[in-house]
Length: 563
Image (tube, rainbow, N blue to C red; front, side):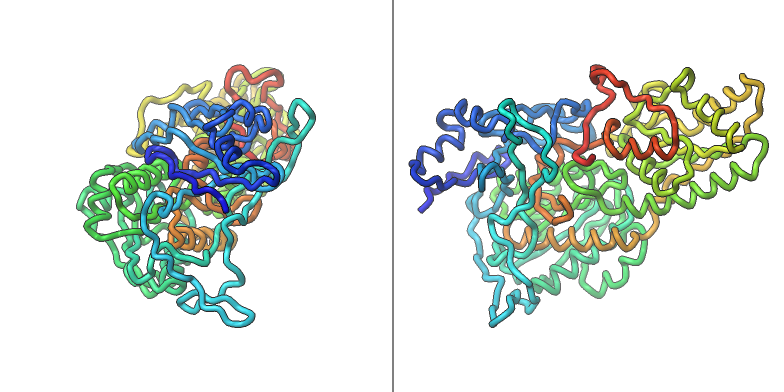
């Protein structure tokens, strides 16, 4: 038998370490070792890289939390995103220990481990050859406590002794055999925060249907206007059921409306208590997730048996750890209309037609880069991760001059966050804490005209800014599919009693991720020395302005997990 694991302090991130069974060793001694209560140096020596989130933090984005390695704890220090969301009080994020060989599993906080009495409702009625939920829903299988998904499937990093670095893993998402909540006692609520994104209605649709059809939950609140819907008293919630959400997945936007800001912990807790809400689904980006984690901690501290789950949403695809965010591929697809229009304008306006398209991408160039790759005819792509160089041997303006001389026209794609090292950073922020960005698109239009004039030529430049068009479209089929996976994973996790977690695809498998691990490396950016940017350069044939020496000036910032 395993010794019981004491619950961590309530101010910890509530990610628990399980005990490892080692043949021939005293279980209690190993328990103390891996909990950091004895011989931490020995644990560090045995597994020096075990206690970092996946990926190297040496290129950490400025403003992201610092992550320090310790023998048995991941300590997240000061520096969460400076926006209207609260600072996360993540003092210590414990990790699970070795599961098998060198696999390390992140554990998700569970309400029963926090001292809340579980209903222990069986989620089964079993007949030969099939497993059904209590509602009659047929499942192929239930997910076990140690079912996991590896984070790192490409193993290239090795330690000093030439051994591979330990593998990090996340628990698989999906239905559990035992429920923490009695379904008839569940009052659920869903809220979406921040900007619009293709797929929001899909998420709402599938959360409601999964709660209703899989678990027979009949009281579901749709919180309007983001966190403001629980704090200002201006917006009444919608009561949601399968009928009210029928066909909303075919529409862009969100039936709940969305807003930035409005977070007030005390008022939100009061709202949850007033309506007896014990499951809260929060859809949003890294700032919204910080707020969701803060709420999960506040509920525990105030003795409220409430499960809080985040569902990651960012059109910029800049949430770390997960394969991709819903809405991103729909935005890339919608951007193609603008790119094709820019090419048509450039070809049809003489002399020296140049089409410039500005796309979303505040801190990351995913939309601009993937739209460029999908289009195949773009001649210059500018993103925040890569320095903007105007003149000289690697200048983008002489490159455009060469392209126009060769084929008579050119197409330029600019991410909205590109070029801040030249244009400067604004101190003005919106309600969500996002800085107002300089007008890099118009800046490039003027610089292109000035350059061609300086070399004695005329340039006909047409500027297209699709702006919010690419985020207001309905989700495409791929994003709709992703939304259904995330929504179902979120509901299964909260019904089982997990809290303070988010859901996502990791290596194309649905997983649960502790929110501190997710936001510690968000927002992520593209790797300017990675394969994706190399592919962009192969399409555009533009000069590579990424410094080839050590990244001493922070230009690389946070490197994402993808190639």
